[in-house]
Length: 193
Image (cartoon, rainbow, N blue to C red; front, side):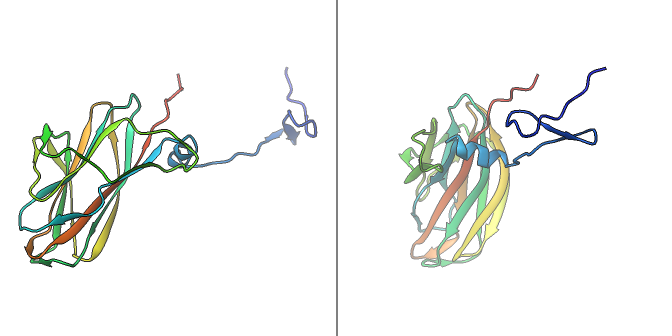
């Protein structure tokens, strides 16, 4: 019969007392671990001026990494400068077949300030009347003018998958400025058998 012997005090062996092994563990979220590895990103369109009562595509993200891209949360801000008739309607689209916009987003930054890693993805910002074609609507939100939406969504984009965001601010006069942001991270490879 084998026994685990007490090795406390040597710095490389476990303490055993009363038939129990003592351990010290640190528990952290997968997102925090990814940030420590330099694999988390903040994507933000910057301000986009909308002037009509029609829907506009404002953000597109396509994962070109070999790892899964976890979309942890989205944020959308709508100012109150324009006159709006109703709440803004925000719709997320799963794997659209095309978008009519290709301007780079204003921010695509690593959330670990000490990391120089960049995200291999297509990330574009839209504009007034920009269109999103095909795909499937997967989530919908309402929000008031002059407010910010932050939604934990936990979507997974495997290589080649994409997500787009469209909004109808129902602007009846003036310009309503909006932005959309994505908080995301690359999932660490799973080494389990």
